[in-house]
Every structure is written in structure tokens, then in C-alpha cells.
Length: 256
Image 1: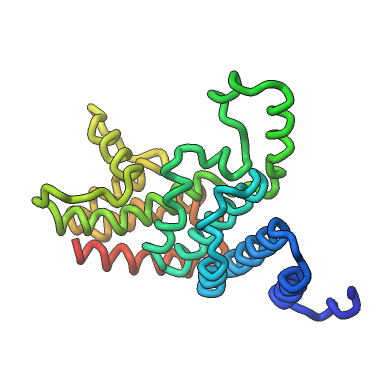
Image 2: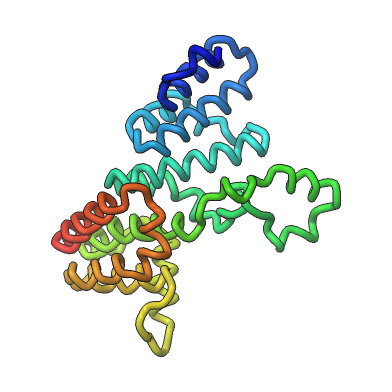
């Protein structure tokens, strides 16, 4: 088998190994894990449409709640990679939808198998704690949580600000992102607003600039040395992502 694997690209090898499992496996669990790993690999390598189509064809969303916790963690990690992949491709609505469940839960760290919540420690006995610690992902496989939150908030900003402007006087206006509105409310409650420091403050300041239709100020808040170091420089093909962001900021500021 190793001889045949030589000369294959990672996508060809992944495709062949997963198809072998799809054909031979009789237990749902291994098949589900193979599908999720296949989607994860597509998303990691910017093959957004293949990843999305495989996720939709597998119907995993319908019954993942019945899976055991390690499979659920793999599913959550796959959805996060799918959302980040969609964002890199400029599919802002798809990125927001993929990340919505994880980010709105307030438990992203736990759902991705990257740590245990302290508030639940008292409810666990030692055996449960050992089991849960064994499920944690090794550090080198962690998803950067600040990058994840930034991608979600920027996607929410690009969707929410034009929507808020279009439905300013609509009493039945719905929220697209509760977390984004929460950040805006936190900012409004501050008695004194200095220049933005944290990633969240940069996104809130950019949202206010976009609301006024000032795309240059919005771009300056999203794309600067501080944000580059924290978030954007961590992306592969970073210049492509920056160009996409500038284009989207211009479009949505004009729409607002």
C-alpha cells in the first residue's frame, strides 16, 4: 500500500483512504469520523465547495447530537474549519452560519476539546474529569480562539450593519448575531472610549465607521499592524484575505 501511496498528493491520498472506509465499514462511527476528516481536509486546503457539498450530502447535522462526545468534538472542529474556509473565500453568510452555533454557545473552548470550563468542575467527580481530560485535543492541534471569534464578529459586522441601516425604523427587526449586538452594547455602556486596544474593540470601532459609510476608517480599524499580528497574519495566503476584506468593506459600507 505504501508503494502505491508514493507520488500521490494529500488530497488524492485522503480521497482514496476515505473511499476505502466508505466501501468497507459497517459501523456508523468510523464512517462518520472519516467523512468529518475528509471535510476538514477539504476546508483546510480551501476547497470550500467540495467540503460544503460533502457536509450537506452526509446529513450529519441531523443526527450528530446522538454521537458520542469525541465524534461531536470532531464535528465541531470541522464546522469551525468550514466557517473559516468560507470566510477566506469571501462567502461571508456561509461563514457566519457555520460558526454561529459554536460562537453563540459561549463554550467554544469546551466544544472544540481545548479545555474544561471551571464552572462545571464542582459537578464532576474524579473519574468524569479523567475521561474528559482524555478527550482534549493536543495543544498543537488547537484552533486559535481569538482568530475564530474575530472571523465570526467581522462576518457578523458585514451582515448586520447594512441590515440595521436598511431596517432602522422596522419594529420587527430581528438580530442576525446576538454576540455582535452584545459587543456593541458593551461599547455603548463605556463612559469613556479611548482608541481600540483589543480585537473586539477594533471590530466595534469598525462597525461604527461602517454605519457612517466611512469605508476607509472601517478598513483602518480592521486592517492594521495590531490586527495583522493578532489575526490576519495567521492565515495562509494572507494578501488574498486582505484584498477580499477591503472589497467586502467597500461593498457593505456603500450598501449601508
